[in-house]
Each structure stands twice: as structure tokens, then as C-alpha cells.
Length: 478
Image (tube, rainbow, N blue to C red; front, top):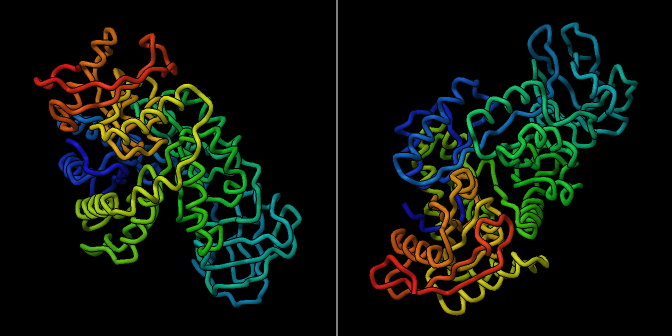
């Protein structure tokens, strides 16, 4: 099955979409990668979802990526004697280490790391920012705050700390158990929540040992500040606009989205734009015009993938939501202004042989109007380099490694095909032409460009490109 767009669609699975028949419908509607949210999924359910996705993959004959999204540290206040209390703007309210149920003057904060780190002047946002506090005093055991916005607080509401750098890693004990479980099932991507600093990736990287690639979710101001360092140590990024819009001024999020997207493109790392893209389709069969525009902006920006969360996981119209996102992306990529916008954002290639080959293959393919760029890739690096160029022609990524093809299913413009490794250069060209023809990218007489590393089966040695005609029988290259 060939997609008629280059941006990929990532769909979250959940109560509305956990059956194998529904997963198949979501794939047919346009989903390329499926997300399993470990905040709401236990290990047996996760294992069953992976099994069902792999079953659908076998049925459709196309590699399908799986992203396991770890919960990350969840910071919450304690409980109240009366479940909730009313507050007034301007009053004093204290968070402390006393486990006694709270009242209108104080509440337990069961996180010593917060009590030790918050300083006077720091903001504390409760319940996704519905209650806003500013610390006036902090001594390591209690934080005396002033209420600046909001009038209510209730049991176990979440706490966000936009001004505080917490001395804790991104992995909780639950995350460590979840990480071991998802790696054992062979998922392709691991999303790490609430990354603050590049060091937060170290533990997950050590545990994963290359069995899955790591995606850093950018949802804290500290991560935006150290974005370049985080990109360098990540395999991919996610613009997690939900928490980002709580911890930073919501009007700043669109600009930050563009900064992250462009920085990831320059680095040749996949970037996903996520959260509330078609939010109204949780309840309605059609989105708002503003939501359509929001999705379009991410596509115009050249994001590798756009993501559905509750729309596909728990909404009333999961298939329709995926189908709508698919249609929006297709229409944007057919827009006459799309190539110019994509080209304007292209950055200079790095000074490596692989980047030079990728640049040359794009320029040749576009100048000669070739049918496709066909790249052989075992590790996925060559496929990423080709996608970084954002060529106007399709990219066919051939790999003998099914895990590589699944990982590349998240990457812009790559049509992934699992195929045995070529025996020699002639076999490589013939195989490329045959697959381009069978996958409906070219007809007999059309030309393709083939990139690979010589000698064959040498990782990271992309150093060759060749133009070939698809033979009259569609099986050989000329």
C-alpha cells in the first residue's frame, strides 16, 4: 500500500482502537505508526497491542512502527479533608511535607525534591495551570505561596514547575519497569517524557542498548533552553504541546514548535508534532477550521509526523480522525506553495560523504524528474540522510533489516520495503528497479536514482549513486 503523502501519521491506541480489526482500519485510513501510551496501559495490554499490530503488519505486508510512550515523573499534591477547597486570589497557601489532609491554608506535597528545589519567585502551576501560585518563602520543608490566579484545588492534582530545575531523572521506577517490558516486545521507538537536560537520556540509552530508538518529548522550558544538546543525544523529537503550553506562555508555543521543527530538520532527526491537532473530533465527526489549519502548518513546516492522541485512542470517530488527517496532509502537499516553503527551510548539508551523496541524489532526481530515489540502508542512517533533503520525488528505502524499515516508517517521505540484501551491484540496481515498478512508483522506461555504500554491507559508507532505467519487463535496470 503506497501513501500519497510524505508526512507520516502517528495514531494513539486506546479503548476506542485496541481491537485488531480497528487497528487494521486505522492503518488503511492512513496511520503509519501506532503509539502505546504507558500512562494508561498495563504490561499484558501493551503486549497484546503489540501482537495485534504485528498481526496487521503481516496481513498488509507493510512495515508498521510502534512507539511506546513512557509516563515520566508525575508530580501531584496530596489529598484534602473535604476533597477540595476554595481559594481566593491574593491569599497565602502552603505546600509542605506534612501528610495530614489539607485545608484552605495548606496541603501535603509528597515530593521532597520539589520542596528542596523551589525558590522564592518560582511559579507553581496546579491542575494544568488552572491554579497559579508564586512561591514567597521556601525552606526545604514547606513552600509558602501566594495565589495569583484560580480559585479551587482538589485531591491529587498535578503540579508543573516552569521555573524550577528538578534534580531528578526522567525515568521513574514505573518507567524502568515499563521500559524493560516494552523493549522485550520489540517496539521500535521509546518516547521519554519531561526531558529537562541531555543527561536525562543516559539511563534509557543504557537500558535500550540499541534495541529501540529514543524520542525526547519537549514539554518543559528547561528542554527548550538546552534544545541543541538534547537533539544531539536523541534519535527523534516530539513537540509535546500539551504540557509545553502549561509550563510556558501558551502564545509562545507556535514559535517554539517552529524552532524545534527546524532544529530537528537541520540535524536530520525526525520530529513529531503532537497534542490537540484534531481535538474536536473526539466528539464530532468533523474538525474545526482552526484545527485543519493547525495540522496544515505542521505539514508545511516539514514535520516528519503528525500525531493523534485522544482522537484515535478514546474518541467517537477514530477512523474518521485518521482519514481527515490523511486528507489534510495530501491536500497540503499538492498545494503549489508547498515545494517553495519546504525548499526555503532546507539547511546546508553536513561535510560528510553520505550528506553529499544525499544532496546530489536530490538535485539530480529533481533536475531530471526521476521517478524515485532508491536508497539501500541497513541501519537507517542513509534513509534519514535522504529524508533530510526533503526531495520532491519519492524516497524508497530498501533494507534487509525489518527493524530498520519499521523505524523509518516514522520518517518523512520514506516508503520502506524489506528486501534481502543485494548480492552485487547489478543485483542491487535490478532489485531497486523491480521494487520501484512493483510498488507503483515507476513504469518501464522511467528512470530512478540508486544510492548505496560500496563495498556492499558496509554500515555508514554511502558513497555511490547511479541512474538506472526500469526495463521493459519492469524487472531489471538498464
